[in-house]
Every structure is written in C-alpha cells, then in structure tokens.
Length: 95
Image (cartoon, rainbow, N blue to C red):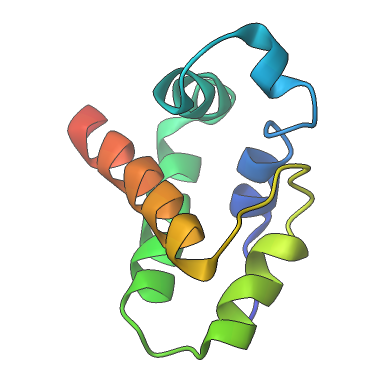
C-alpha cells in the first residue's frame, strides 16, 4: 500500500513530546490537522477511509502507522483504529 505524503506529514506532528502539552487526543489531532490545507486533509481522509474499510490485514494496517514517522504508538491495532477514526471524523466535521 502506498502511503500518501499528506498522511506522513500529518503523522509527523505526533511526536514523542506531544503528551507533555497536557492536551487531549482531540487537541493533538486538531494541532496536527492545523498543519495541513484543505486538499491535504481530503487526501488524508480518503486514505484513512481506505485503511478503515477493512481490506487490509492487521500486519499491513500496523505497518502503515509504524512507517508513518509518528512517534506515538498504540497498545493494539484496535486502539490505532480508534485514533484514525477520530482523525477522519474531525476532518469530516471541518468539511
């Protein structure tokens, strides 16, 4: 699966010190999305929609996140799905 550069750009905002900001996941996501323009957000949403559609096995799903440049991780693939769903939903609310 080819990971779009817009998704990598988004994920680079999830660095290891983000939790020191004392903010919620929603604030982290809003901050990360603030670094993208509307076209980039659409690309990220489309990519996340494909990931969440369930056409990829868990290994591929995890590979995408782990190779994205994000410095935060998840205990399980389910936790990762929940986080990606929050990102997608926040983009949808903006649109």
